[in-house]
Length: 400
Ligand code: PLP
Image: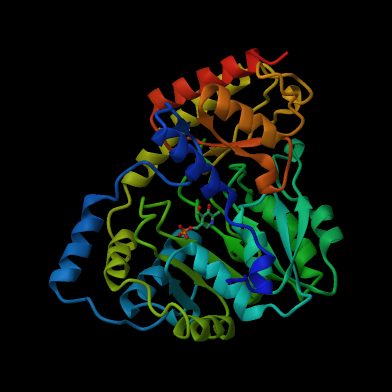
């Protein structure tokens, strides 16, 4: 009889993937489900990037590569950090993995000992706590309240730091809240971090290019140079270039950490797909003009969704500045009765009843560590979003 390892028993499967699976199951049963749970752009990978991959196949770039990335991709990443973030790295400070997810996982595996703590600001991307647990560490949650735009305040960070703290994980723009830290806000956190030299920073900049209202992007190693020596700056091509299926993520940071991560890669996954690496070279070095065009489309969708959700009884939806998610509060719906007779006592029950009654799949806030909220991904057409939000309005109006 199979039994899970003790390590695996500490973690749960991704709740966002579970909601997507449930929505697919209802669709198979013939229901007209709208799923707003997926975390990927609905755009195709740009043509020039696909062409670069085809050329790479034809050239015979189909063999093993250096385990943590081909030199051409590492150079493109060095150039990207310099051009877009004003950060100077050498290629020996760069590592490539099959997606952003393994970058974070490998960083945790490379650095955590039992008892080490990792500060995870909530609401958080679902995988951070479980990756910390898989690596034997302990996640410590620090809440970013809705009133402060879901962002971590310096005093909350200060209170969460202990002698056992190994990492702080930052994520801007945030999945699930869409919150974007300004340079000044990062400097505020930097002041705290400067006082605690044992704390390293992992910054997940995955949604850097999905930014609204003319916001300029800031990442912590850039705006607080004193932290450069203990910051791992992580990014990837999945969201910026609509390349979720290609599986390329990357990071840059201190060489000893990069070397340790390479050791893990060499004994686990080995190199990311050679063809996808060449596609990523083109993504980073090629034309970037579609990025603002796509952000403008996302911004229009954001405006639509925020307006319609704020028109739903009992929902309050803040306006996020990046990524493609909104994180509305359902505080006004808690304690009310759904037409099924069920009293809604949590965001999970709100999402469950919404799916049953109106066939709209959203992910409940508890999955991201902050209730009572839910997350909508608006990476889908305005027609679908309008229909989904009308259904949410109807559902909310039906609560007594
Ligand atoms: N970081 C955040 C905040 C994400 O939302 C995601 C994907 O949903 C990732 C990292 C992982 O990206 P990848 O698909 O490249 O592994």
